[in-house]
Image (cartoon, rainbow, N blue to C red; front, side, top):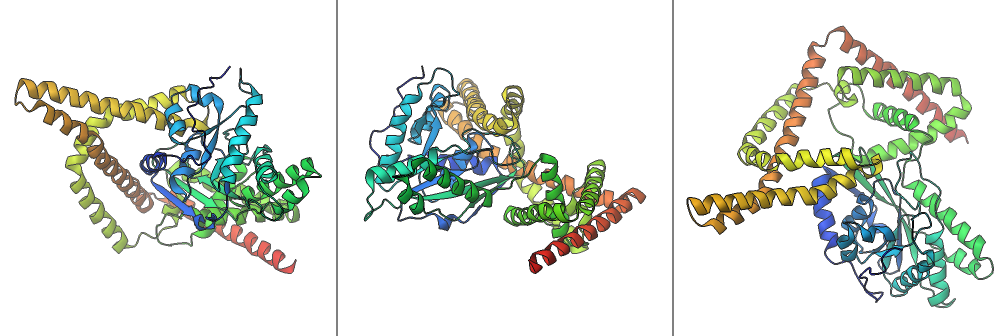
Length: 470
C-alpha cells in the first residue's frame, strides 16, 4: 500500500507556497526561452480547471505553476509521495490520485481525491491535471481519461444549483517544446479558450455517462487546438521542415522563428498536409521526398535551414562578430571561474540522466532533479574547502566559506551565458565559412532548397485555393 501520510492541508483554500517562484527560477535556467500565449484567457472570476498535454514529465506541471497567473492545486499520482519530489508536492499542496496501474494502490481512496477537488472548485479555486493520465513520447495526444469531466460535473452537482452554478471553466493549456529534453532549448505555453460545461451540467443528472463522454470530447478538441498532433514522428519532422522553409524567403535575414509563429505555421501545414493527401497524394509524397532529401543534406553539411536561406549581409556579420567578442570578453573572467566551479556537477547531471532516464519524456525531469542535488553539493564542497584553506592561512574562514558558497551559483550564471554565446558564435562562424567556401556541394544545397520551397509554396497555394472554393 502507498503511504497515507501525504501532509496535505485539509481546507480547500490551501494554496501552493513558494513553489511558483521556485519553478519559475529553475525553468528560466533550464530553458533558454519561454513564450506564453493567451494567459489573459484564464478567468479570474470563475473556478478553473487547467488541463494540459503531458509529454515532459514533472516539468509539465512546473511550467503551468511557474508561468500562469493562477496558483492551481495539481493532481499527481500517489506513488510520487514515495520519491524525492515529495517536498515539492507538499509545497504545491498537490492532491494524490490513486491509479489502477500503480502496484499496491487502493483506488477507493480516489473518493477523497474527488472530494478535495470539488471543495477547491466550490471555494472558487483552481486545480490542474493532465487528462492523458501519464507522461508520454507520442507525436499526438493519447486517449484522455474522464477524470476531469467527472470532477467538474460532480462538483456542480454537489455544490451548484440551477440558479447559482459554480460556473467552473476548463482551460486547455498546450505545451510545445522544440527539444524537450535538451538543456537551454525553448518551450511554448499556449492557453486556449475556456470551456463552459453548462450543457453537460444540465445533462448530467439524467444522462451522466453521456454527459461525461461529451465533455471529455470537448476537452480533447480544445487540447488539440493548442497542441501539435501528427500520425508519426516522420510526419512531424517533414511538416515542421516544410513550414520552416516556406516561412523563410530566399536570401532573408538570419533569424530564429519564434515558437508561437512556428506553432501556427505547423498547425496550418498539418491541416493542409491532411487535406492535400486526400486530393493529390502523389504530389504530396513527391514534395515530402524532396523535403527529406533537403533535410539529409542539411545534416550532412551541419547546417540549419536559416543559415542556408540567409544572405549574411556584411553589416549584420560585422555587428554579430563585434557583439559576440565584446560579450565573450566581458563574461570571460567570471564565466571561466564559474566553469571551474561547476564543471563536475554539469557533467554528472548529464551522465546521470543518460544512465537513469527510462524514456525521452522524462529526460528533462532527471536532469532538473539531479541538478538540485549535484550543484548544491558541489557548492558546499567548495565552501568547505575554502573554509579549511582560509583557517590554515589567511583567517576569516567563515567569510571565505560564505563567499565561495555564493560564488557557485553566481559565477555559474556567467559560465552559462559565456558558453551559450561561445556556442552561438562558433555555430554561426562555421556556417558562414562553410557557405562561403563550401564549393559545389553547398551550391547544390541552396539549389535544392529553392526547388523545395517552390514546390511547397505551390502546394500551399493550391490548398488555400481549395479552402477558398469550399
